[in-house]
Amino acid sequence: MSIRMRSAALVLPLALLVAGSRPAPADEVSEAREKAVLATLAPPNPEASVLQGLVTIEEQFPDSQTAAARILPLLKDPRAKVRRKAVRVLGILQPRLEPRELADVTKLLSSSDAAEVVDSLKGLRGLYATASIPSILPLLGHPDEHVKREACRTLAIVADRSVVPSLEPLLKDPVGDVRTDAEGAIAQLKRKP
Image (cartoon, rainbow, N blue to C red; front, side):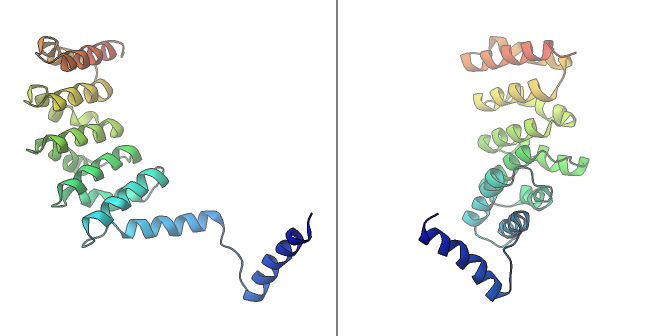
């Protein structure tokens, strides 16, 4: 061990002793960091701050037990980007939702913004919300091909084989990617018990 390393090894513990404190355990630091990030979600924070907070939760706290309760109110936020990101992060967190909370998610499926519908479908995949199937089925006839494709993918995960007849008309859709996703969903659903 070099002299420089030895002196550094002595200085840190000595500095802590002089300061009369110890370093906080890693989980306390992480918990404090998560609380600070969750605080960025509270109104009236600017859209950019809320979105960054949601990204941070998604990337650094995907196993959070407390974030979902702070994210759920964002599903009613007047800003579309916030609602879209909130529903996607809920899908990553995979909390167990009460029926009224799931209703807030499925309400987003009726948005006139196709991108919001797509993000809501992606979030529902992570939530494994079988109660959302009746809200997803009408989307198979949506005019936007991306919505139809995501509806197929979501049904493949949350539904059972009983929805196959609803998917079969998409096998004749004029858009090849819609046909492909319908075929994949039907195959996946037929493999389920």
